[in-house]
Length: 255
Ligand code: ZN
Ligand code: FE
Image (cartoon, rainbow, N blue to C red):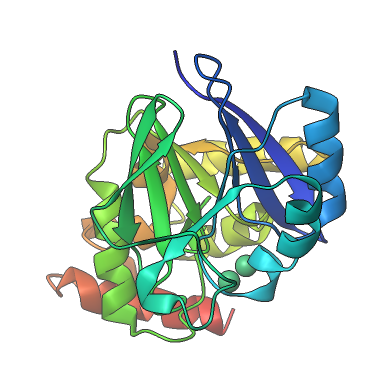
């Protein structure tokens, strides 16, 4: 049985997620931007929190932790290598380590770039990938601490996962990402139709997450640095993918 996953809008544009394993009753929370909407979702579902998975140390991903823990004691899991900047961890994990939500097994992926030691969590049986500020719908996080080639490497680790994987990212940035994507890949019909879909969803206040990895591969310019049309559009035919990615990221920073 797959995980039952709830998307919880927090703050102005963040998402937290609750992932519930019906077989065992285990429930994980992925990131804690603020407590109130998460406490409300726990009350509404009646789920008992067992684990809290932290993707990275930024305040908009950890600030609600103390208040959630006060009401729902749970095991806190985060990157061992970043433990000095994270709240106290019960389980410190590294790339390749396993994380379980009840009967569901997941793996930790180091996706450094936005921050050093940002991690993602992949649950293959549930086809779920929690990416926070690494891979995002039609975009990727701003590179604050790492280098752009490092962010490119991190995204490539996720690009090779099965195309039917759902990408649960940390922010509702998709409409802005869509406008930018059209400046990089203007003739891509799949992008054009996805932008239409995103516009409709946002007009009705519907989250644009999760998105399918296959759809990201077809439309997200940050996963398409190898695409000949994009390279030609940027005047970078035959350049290596990390350089093309870096150019796209720089353009987005100045967009
Ligand atoms: Zn962040
Ligand atoms: Fe964030």
